[in-house]
Image 1 (tube, rainbow, N blue to C red):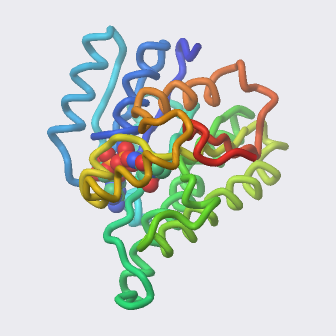
Image 2: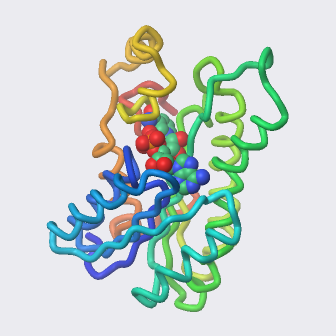
Image 3: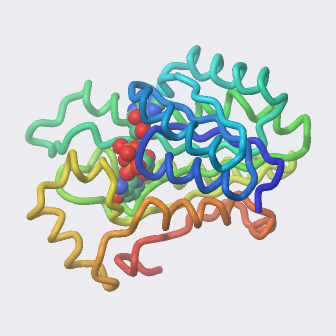
Length: 250
Ligand code: NAI
């Protein structure tokens, strides 16, 4: 479904990003695996992709830092000459905080990582896509951006809600240039994210609210991202696709 495409996936050293990198490769894409701190995870993803028979490169960049984002795009463009697909996947809750322990510094960190990073990555690549009259951007938002998230996810859910709205605004701005922009809203997905922030009793409460009775897997999110990136979704833009086992239905 992605034969010959070049994709850059942010935060691809673990979880959903890594599963997406590997799924893209299985569908025929060359993949740039962005990482910030987890170099060994990124290198493992690259190794897996090469075993699949596709090209891959690990690219270090903190997506909250404009200069590092620009350098990342330059590195990928130097290697393959183009970027067809950008998946803005890097994101994190950083901590569970309610108003009781909310600080301005934490609020800004969450916004920078989950919202500003999307602007920085898109800003650094859209002209290149526009020149080629072709491009596809997929933003990994969250069910939290629709329903306010679990307790302590206020800043995160506000950022993800902003990401969903920004996706729609970008889709309108970039459609004339042949660039599609969509979002995906995962529900509760079993990744290192919940290992960090959801103790077993909290995680079980989440599961109890899912009609399908289980958490999703990174691969189940990756499969939908592959669809959004593929020609099968060529008439879709500005959409935020819910993938949550029935936890939230529109
Ligand atoms: P994860 O923790 O495995 O993945 C997050 C990735 O972002 C990591 O690879 C991390 O290194 C990277 N990252 C963090 N800060 C970064 C930075 N400054 N620069 C570059 N990379 C950075 O967890 P998961 O679950 O795979 O998360 C992926 C995305 O999915 C995130 O945006 C998360 O908010 C979103 N999501 C996850 C859900 C879940 O239930 N696991 C539900 C809804 C959305």
